[in-house]
Amino acid sequence: MHPFPHRYVVSASAEPEGDVAVASAGLEPMRTAPPVEFDGPGDRWSPETLLCGALADCFVLTFRSIARARGFEWVSLDVEVRGTLERENRNSKFTRFDVEARLRIPTGGDAEAAERYLHQAEAGCLISNSLVGERHLAVAIEAIAAAA
Figure 1 (cartoon, one colour):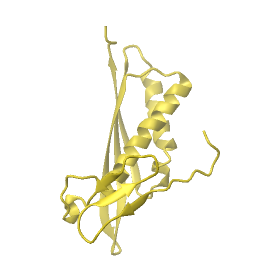
Figure 2 (figure 1 turned 30 degrees about the vertical axis):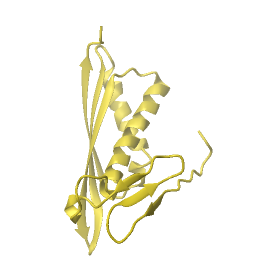
Figure 3 (figure 1 turned 45 degrees about the vertical axis):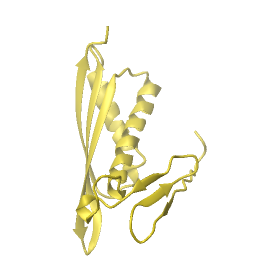
Figure 4 (figure 1 turned 45 degrees about the horizontal axis):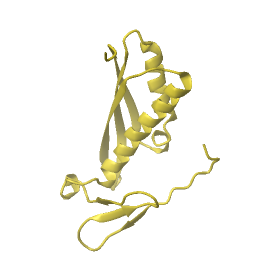
């Protein structure tokens, strides 16, 4: 890992109507629009979905790092994030993030360690730690037979 501080540069550009172009050096640009809740088309990433996506992605990458460091075997991890946006004191802000993590481990795997590592991933996720809204984690662990 590179020493801190890390710096990330992203640009956005738009005209009076239409999509917003979001770009960062070395990455594919993406087009965003307001979500349907803000009268957008609902068929593109929005700032709101990008934030929830960043949280889900960070959770998975943090778990992967923890599992690798501990030599923990797992099969797959699905994470769903539900962000709640509310209006408080005339400002809109995310007040709650519900994270649901569904982890599949090999039959005979250590489910107790799996749950502990999932909670460590939530606590260690830099996106989670940068958010103000309440955070709630629900975990489900399933043991599955290895593919033949």
